[in-house]
Length: 163
Image (cartoon, rainbow, N blue to C red):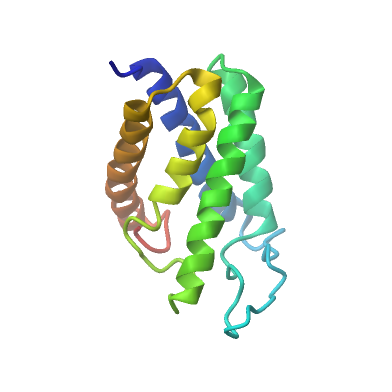
């Protein structure tokens, strides 16, 4: 049996974790938009993560997700765990995309959605008592929602690229 309320809670926090850096970019422009990797190149002479992964984005994601958890009545630690692991998954995706020669913000369906939803869902398993089916539900709903919303947000001019 799926834990629908817990799944929804994790999905809301994932939406905040992944949406708040986009909102911050739109609101703040280039202010505090230093690349997280500091411009470092990997052994393949490509950026470690790329210019679209910023210190501002990570800070905003962690703070927003922690605050969102409190606002929905969840422990602040849940928000911090979801925010941290979602951003870690996003960095894994960016690192992998750079190794594949893809540009920052280039679309890579599945690679753009799965790590940033799977890692948080796995991290929340014991804390929330999620089952394997719950984790799969989080990943599948996040994947579908991300693909649909990303295209819509791109058409509205909120996102630079659809994912």
